[in-house]
Image (cartoon, rainbow, N blue to C red; front, side, top):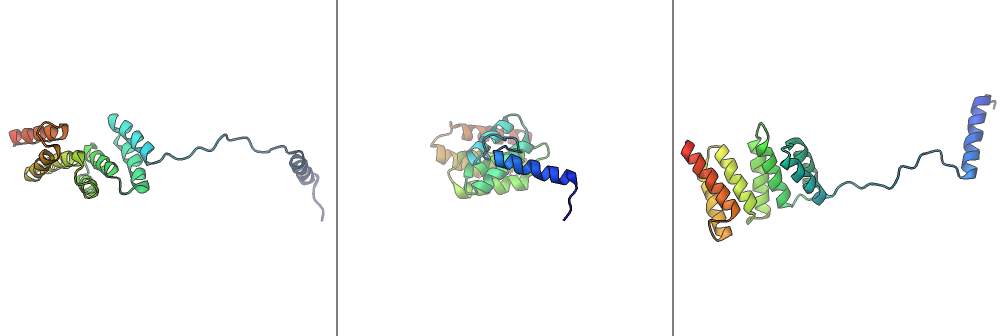
Length: 159
């Protein structure tokens, strides 16, 4: 079989490089692993502080795929869906309810779902979560109770 000179030269160079141990590819450095659910939660919290809901939701949805039974992930997903410029209350409720089914004593989820119910004009549902928070906290001074109580009082004053 007849090969032209260019192909023969290329084949010869590759053979020589292989024989001398020379590398044709540049070193890419150490392998970098993808963030785990805990690291994604940290990235999501940073995004939430910056009100970057798109990034928060992206990180939290990946974290939920890794740890679908993590109540904190679902609570923050609900929060992020609720806090967007155009709130997605159905998705927020879905994730708050998942968080509470995984951990019925999750104070943050009780507070946030109560606030979502106020956005949905259902103060009676918010009151149920306020009552639950009083039981969980053992008082009316824990942060979650105080925040939801204030939101409920503000809601009632406006309506």
